[in-house]
Amino acid sequence: MIGLQQSNDCHVQAGTRNKVQETPSQALSDALIKVAEKRDRKAFAYLFEYFAPKIRRFGVKQFGNDAQAMELVQDTMTSVWRKAHLYHNDKGAATTWIYTVMRNASFDALRKMKSNKEEHISEDIWPIIQDSQAEEEVYKDHLQTAQIQKYINKLPPAQRDIVKGVYFQEMSQEQLADHLDIPVGTVKSRLRLALQKLRAEMGERE
Image (tube, rainbow, N blue to C red):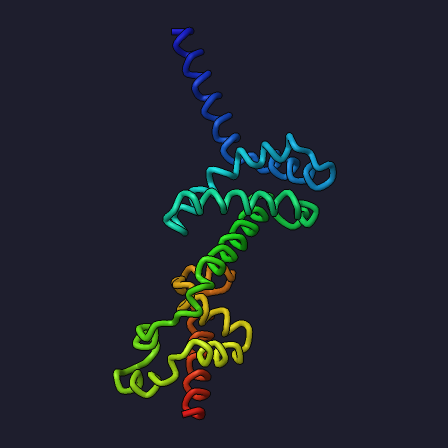
């Protein structure tokens, strides 16, 4: 009975240690500070070992491609190494800071992946934007890449990013909200205003 109790105690203690190891907040923060202050490669290796699998899973979900997911891991952790001096442990956890770096790297990757598509805008984009088939016909003459890009570049930056994210980068409104760290309602509002301005601008050129 004593041996059994000792065995159970060991399992409990092991389970407790595992829970601590799952979220070693202080250890991660300390490691990030060592990277920032001492360029400590051992500390960076610890961070990489902890975060790489998590970033990879996020990347696979985001891109649907393991190769691109691994690129996200490399881009994120390279930025962590270079920008570690920007981290301040009194302003937040290391996990929060590194996941913010990851989201920014992911957004940049999506923009690069879709940038070539901006030169080949197909006519099927506008049925999504227009409220009716009649409106779609009104704007068909404007479906020239240079013209569309010119109109969009006149939008305020916040609205321009939303339009490009939704229609050129094929991101959902929820994904944009996550990457821009704004509410989904704000994304919808900016998109609506942007489309109103585009329609007005293109109507005047008509």
